[in-house]
Amino acid sequence: MPRISGVTIPENKQVQVALTYVYGIGPKHSLDILSLAKVDPTVRAKDLTDNEISKIQEAINENYTVEGELQRIVVGNIKRLKDINSYRGLRHKNNLPSRGQRTRTNGRTRRGKRIAVGGAQPKSASKT
Image (cartoon, rainbow, N blue to C red; front, top):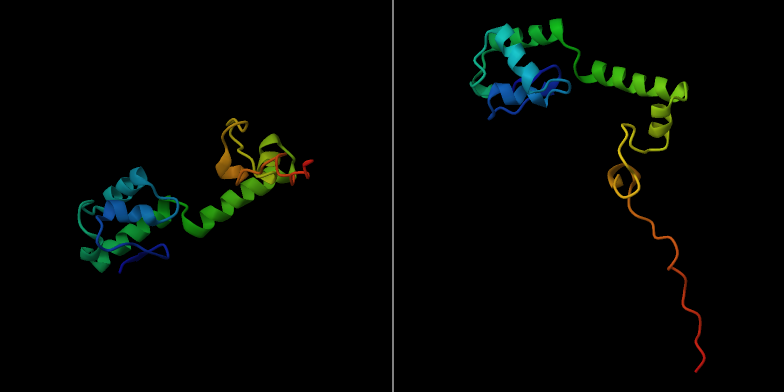
């Protein structure tokens, strides 16, 4: 099982797809990395030689920020927005969409499960 940038990539997938399992590498960057390392994108990850894996790792280390370092940068950016009380930072604090989406009817992913307002009162005893 090949490990690249601390991530065990799936061995039965083509290497161009397997590289996208690393945080910060998408399909486009995956193909760019493989062309830099001069590795065939359609070869399976289990068939990579140690030399090819080291070439891929070098190409990633030289040109890209991935995994833990990238996650620290993203978290730091969000923390900075919260600290300066920007609009986007306030939306992050309140767990609401920060990129202009409507929240009147949609936005359940960020806002959570619906909460019923009214109508949850016990029925009063009726005269019989």
